[in-house]
Length: 382
Image (cartoon, rainbow, N blue to C red; front, side, top):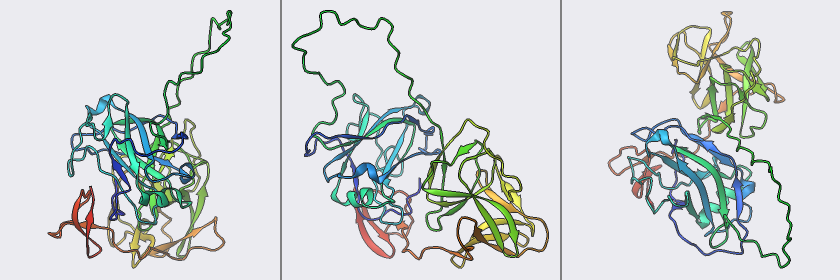
């Protein structure tokens, strides 16, 4: 998981507390079963991500709780990692403790301060600073990334005790002596378990090439746009937006933020003439005037040829392969869904969010303490 946008305040503190509540109006903000990837001995692995829209947190107040119902997967041997953060990607990204992380304080599966094994949920208390990034922007909401867990429900708890899983109805003063129960009731439907593939987008540029070994469905994806490359004209590559299903192995250019893309059982659409070549298995080495890779040069995102400098394209990414017709050594983007071609895509001039300790060493997952961010000393609370 990336922590490039970690700033100086924690918005979600992983503790089991009964905080001050309001009238009982708890809200279930997520109701799908999502199985996380395997958590290996070093707590590494391919994280699974759940994104919950900002509209689900309207009316949230400081002291409310975020309750995540989860179980530990058998194939992770009791290991798991859980990270909860704001999805407000162009603002100050706040974060909680990393659970099960070797580089910070380690929390065991049954640690009472973070996970209630008897009730089967994690619980986070919302602070005042968490509300605006979560609910105050169209790009708000929360991001839950995890390994070794299966998450089934997420609740916004605004009452003292949360929803009663088995409420007792008021007794009937005039019970029916012959209720005639159904002798063959319909069984409860099996929960739908949907599979997702994570598309990781560079947080500084907002672009990435992408390829999946599975057919994907972009029809309901709103946090990024996907494009295939139709043609190259002079120094511009013409990009056409994908809005439906995509066949496995299709090379794409993505524009947006890191997103979970649903897997589809359909074969998906294969785009004839797509110049983006997807890499599905072993990494591919490219070194030719008609083979281009995505680069950032002088603040501009573009495709650059590899004639003078070979490049390695890893699995899950894509490169541009065009006819050897003397095209420009670098190609800018022309999006078909916009009025004019984008001649340059310039990265944001945001201040650095890299975190360093007092010895000048970069810290990937900082815990509580004194650190240096953008040349200034700050204190991160645990």
